[in-house]
Amino acid sequence: MLGLISKKRGSASNRRLDDTIRTTAINLIGAHYPDFGPTLTCEKLHERHGITLSVESTRKLMMTEGFWKPRKGAKACVHPMRERRARLGEMIQIDGSPHDWFEGRGEYCTLLVFIDDATGNLMQLRFAPTETTLGYMRVLHDHIVAHGVPAALYSDKHSIFRINTKDADPNAETQFSRAARELEIECIHVNSPQAKGRVERANQTLQDRLVKEMRLAGINNMAEANAWLPAYIADYNQRFSVVPKDPQDAHLPYHGTAEELMRTLSVQVIKTLSKNLSCQHQGELIQVETSGTGLALRGAKVALHQHFDGSRELRWRKRKLSYTSMTKAQKQAVEADGKAVNARVDKALAKRKMTRNTGHKPAAKHPWRNMSIGKPATDEHGVTR
Image (cartoon, rainbow, N blue to C red):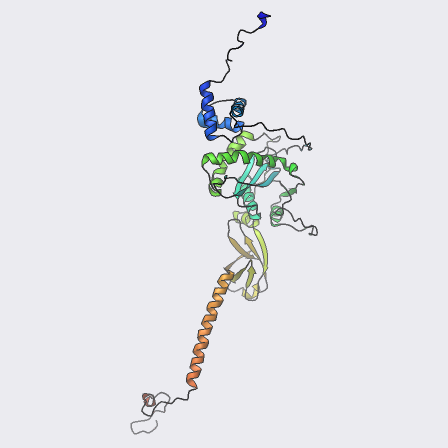
């Protein structure tokens, strides 16, 4: 029996973590990464401090020091698995993730996420105040410029993507679905969050990792974050992407011009011009400035395009119209100025009328009586010429 007992029994393991490295790692974790997960902490210790530990060693250190608590296993819930698409660009899952991304250092906002189903690549990320039609149109625009036109978009049933009223016309479209149809992109709407699990899991990962990365980088607002995101996307895809079954890219090139793409990815509202070539839109008076086609534009249907960059254009029969816009407050100010001018003119006319009705006549020696204006011309002897 004594021969079976190892001579190393009771001594320290040769693989034991060095006390100096252990103390340094614990101090760094407590100073910089107390709320990080073990995997991300392990990566940051290696990248930023040159300390190479395994994920399991980092987890044990964090559990011993109280920085990490093991999570309880979730209840088993079986969902049918869907096989990934074969090629990049066949289906792009899209979603918005509202979260306190800047941990109180900046505004509460939403991250718009485009992720490829075949590879798990983050295709586009962009921070926006909320989920809006123009916000998604901007991200889709950037996606098409960078990669081409995808075959399908996979989203939930948000009112941005489809009309949800019970008595809606089956052929009715939202602005986003109209733009996707014009670009020949298929829109697929899922019935549950589990159906778009890939983008949902990406949101969870981003709410953990991205928040902490921006904290370390000192990013505190949406403008800084949107400028920094491309570098983060490249690093994320290098870590987490998978190889597609088919190496061919399913994106198609966009053959239109940049102006045409902007025009397609805009909110379009049809307006009818009045006889004076004006129309109302969201409390504004829009007045068309034209020369030579005024009569043809009376009662014409024009399209007002609202672009995601804040600009607008008014179009009629593929022609761009020049126009001016006036808000309600500006219109009231102009009307008030007009009333004031009219009041002054009326006052002057009334004053002139009162002066003429007094019956006043100049005196006999008044210079006015010696003026030749309005009198017949005579010679020096008083004879009329």
